[in-house]
Image (cartoon, rainbow, N blue to C red; front, side, top):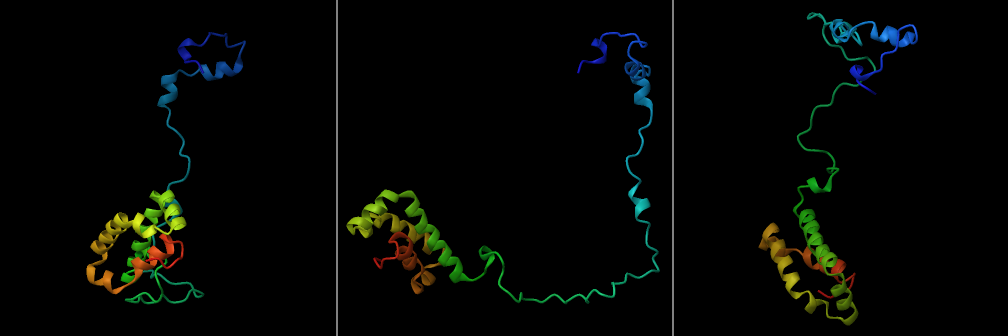
Length: 160
């Protein structure tokens, strides 16, 4: 659309729509107050008198008191406070990374039976990370890391 300054001048008699649009100068149109689009929100919700108490509808049950401990497990397993679940998840993530980063080496190790030797350094680094996050005593007292090695890296075989 062209700005009004560059629009061709057409006589008002030739174009009645343009005549009504251009009859009012721009400055005069800007000075006219705009109509409100909707009634004010205060009119839709009058204030409640202070003496009127809040009442619950008759079919609504009374509110339950908040319990100090949740009666069910959290929906998101990452929010669980169970150290075994966290350790299991961490060990599986560390071993899954090995499978993701070295797929050909894993396939070769499974095929030739040299999985333990091929991944010796990576398993050692992953175990150190695991121990650093869960603690040495906990890591040595559980078999989460070994289970993840056998299940994920070894494809379900009992190699580790």
